[in-house]
Image (cartoon, rainbow, N blue to C red):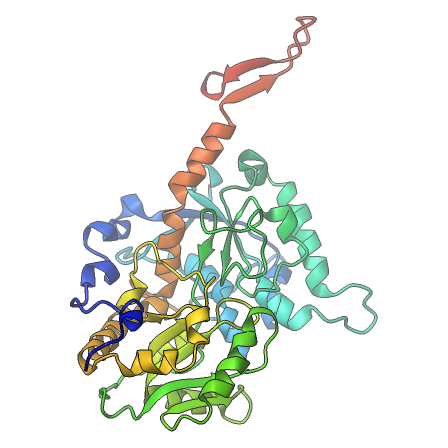
Length: 429
């Protein structure tokens, strides 16, 4: 079948899947050696900032952390899980202290901040927003707001923050509404986010910060024996249709596609077996729509990857995890919003993707899916280790910024009248 020239621009390349672009090469896996492992200093913040928010009562007076070898507090289920990145990274740092074999590990906890590459702030900001942003009886301010204020006060008093201006601190705010009060005060830090949809570029941007995947809420498709022909649905979407801001495209596409016989486009939620239905639907579909909602990203992309359903991404402002080392065009189809809203454009596009091209992308999905899997204990090159590797790639820029800011040491010499300060290289002061 001949292809329209306009469609060719949007089709994925026909070249064979480039494993080196997705599966990290041996040379880039040097982080597995002790020399290249990210050294992380983690504050011993009181448990009210982290595991107490999950209902953990602690092991007694002065006990900050659970013994993760014998007790791992559960994270709340449902949609809470999609933003649980704070939980998995904290568990991994705690577990790193007991790991004898560092093979496959990308980060370890150190207790001397002067030895650290970065400083990790273990505030569970996402679950704090989800569970504690509403006023409780007899409260004048929410727990979420109070803890953010206490966090800012704590960090401002720390020598580590003063030394770097916060530039080497890692703070997780994966839920788009998390850390809403404190972000304007803590912006020098590296934020770990889902996207930049609710941040001005002066607070968060791709040069400074790290984009992390959502934790997929559908189960992994571990026994996938499907193929192009057995996946009967061409295009699948199930979720909230009526959204504000940039998400208005969802309802426009709904009216364009709802009557197409090989398209499933329907409202869905986690209620009434919604996750089970979505999992079954994605596993029986060739392509899964990932459309901008209230923010540029959504968990749906990572559910599609876990289901080996080739994602069709319609979100002009989306930022993707690890895109400096992964070529998403090998396993995703990207469509501009303006093109998607043209009559029949989207359907013509996916219908003209050949069985061979789809199969290539489907195989690629199976090769990259581990990069988006959160688990404890973490495994080599899973989502936890990939996030630490992404942080590691920020370290040279962090050190450059800190070193340049500290070129001159200003010291008052009261014995020399008329001389208010002197500029001395820091290493000579």
